[in-house]
Image 1 (cartoon, each protein chain N blue to C red):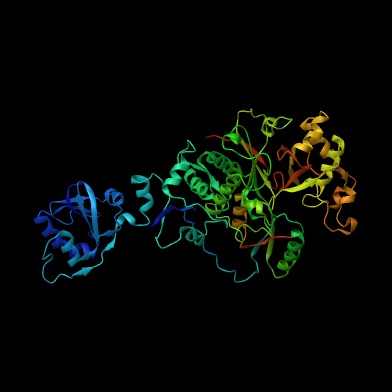
Image 2 (cartoon, rainbow over the protein chains, first blue to last red):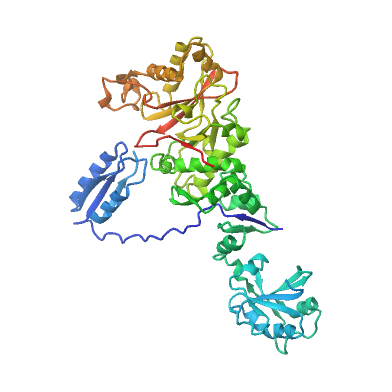
Amino acid sequence: MSTKVFDPTSEQLASAVESPDRLASLEGATIGLLDISKPRGDVFLDTLESLLSEVGAIPKRYIKPTFTKPAPVDLRHEIAAQCDAVIEALAD
Amino acid sequence: MEDGYIAFVKQDCPTCTLIEPVLSQLADLGILKTVYSQDNPEFPALGITKDDSELELSFRLEIETVPTLLKVSNGEETNRIVGWLKQEWETFCETKDLGAEGISEFSPGCGSRSVDPDLQPILQKKFGSGLGSKVVEFASSEDEFEAMYELGWSDGLPIVPPTEKRVLKMLEGTSRSGDEIVTLVPPNLDDLTVEKIAINAVMAGCKPEYLPIVITALEAACTDEFNMHGLLATTMPVGPVLFINGPIRNEIGMNSGMNLLGQGNRANSTIGRALQLTIRNVGGGRPGEVDRATHGSPAKIGLCFAEDEEGSPWSSFSEDLGFRPDQNTVTVFPGEGPRAIVDQLSRSADELARSLAMGLLGNMHPKLVLGFDAILVISPEHASRFADAGWSKQEVNEAIIAHTIREADLLLRDVDGVAEGLPQSFAGLELPKFRPDGGLLIVYGGGGAGLFSASISGWLSGPKGSQYTTREITK
C-alpha cells in the first residue's frame, strides 16, 4: 500500500532573475564598492578603489549597516540605480 | 451510487474517444449507468453523461486513469478496471463482442485530471482534508523514511511521515486556521502558513499540544530584530535556543530538572527541532547552502528547555519581564550549545558570583566583551548558595556582571601575544563582559545534585546582530 504525505517545503515559485550582460569596458563605468561592515573590508575596498580609478572607472562607496543582515531594500535600489556594476567585500 | 457500472472519461484522452462506441453499446444494454466526463459534459453524447469537470467525484473516488470503469453493488464500489483492454472489459462486464470491428483491442488510457499535480492541492483543499499542501505519494515498494531523506526533508535524523491523519491531528493543537500566514520565513522569505508549520512539527515528532509553542517561536524568530537570516547564515555555531515559562511547561510534560538540556524528553527534544525543520524546509535554510556555519553545533538540531519555576527561589524569567505566572511564554535566544561552569568549592554567595563570572569570561573569546549576551542556567545547588545568603536574582545578576569588569587595556588587540581583542579605541576603559541592561539571562533549572551551572553564549547582540525576545504563547 502506498503512503501519502504532505509536502513540508514551500510551494512558492521563485521568480527567475537574469544576470545582466558583463560590462564591455570599465572605462567611464560607475562601479559600486559595497562594504558589509566586516573588519578590514575597507582595506580591500580602498585598494580596489584606486585600481578602478587607474583604469578610468568611477568607484562609488556604499556601506551596509551590519554584516549580519541582508542589505536594506533602499540600499539595494540605490546601488542598482546609480551603478553599472557592484563589487561586494564579503568577509574579513 | 447506482448499482451497475460507471465510467470516468475525458475527451482529451484518445483512449476515451476510441471507446466511445463501447460506452454507447454498454449504455444501450442498460449495463452502464453513468459516464462522468472530466472535461466536456457533452462527451460522450449518450444521455447518461454527467459533468465532473469540477473533479469532485473523480477526486473522492481516487480516479487516477481515464477511462476507469467501476462496478457498483449495494451502493459501494466492488471493483474497477482502467484503460481499455477488450477482453478485460468483456469479462468485467460479462458481455461479449464489445467494440465495433476494427477498433484496437488495447489502449492504456491517460492520467485523470484529478491527479494533475497543479490541480491536486486545490482539489485536496476543496474536497479532501482541507489541507492545501501538495500530496507526495510513495509507492508501496518504497521505504517512506528513506524516500523522505532522498527528498532532503530531514535534518539527518529520521522524521515522522506527515500523513493526512497526523497533520490534521497536529492542527487540532491550535485554534488558528491552517491557511493563516504566520510570517515570512527566511532566508527565502516565503509565506509560512500554520499548515506548513504543522507538517514540519509532525516530522519533528511533536505532539499537537506543542504546536502553539512552535508557531509562537517562529513568529518571534522571523523578525528583523531576531534576525533569523543572519543567525542561519553566519559562520558561527549558533541557532535559535528556546526556553519556556508558564503552566504549559507542566501541561506538556517538559523537563526543567535533571538533564534538561539533554536528551530524553519529547517536548524538549522536538519543539526546537520543529522550528529548525521549518526554517530548513519552508525557508530553504540548509547547511552548506545559506547556512554557512564553520562547525555548527548539535544544538542546531533544536534546543528547547523549560525553567523550573516551582523549584526556583526567585520569580521566573518571564515574570521578571512583567508577564503573569499564568501566562505561557517562549523566549527565543540566538545562541550556541551549552557548556558547563564547574564550581564545587564556593560556599559563599560572593565566592560563587566571582567564580561564575570567571567561567563566563571565556564565552566566544576571553578578550571579547559586550558583543555577546548569555544565558546562565543556574543549577539548584548553585542557586541555593545565593538563596541562603538572601540574594535576589537581580543581585546575583549584578554581582556576576560586576565581577566580569576588567581593564580594557588587558583586552586590546595584540595584548598577551594574542591578536584577537578590542580595538585601540577602548583603551583606558573598564568594561564588563555583558551589557548590564539584559545581557545576562539567568534561568533556573537542572538536577538536584551537581555544583555546576550551564552557560549558553549568544552571538552578536543588539541591533547589529540578533535581539532575543520573549512572547506570550497563544493557542
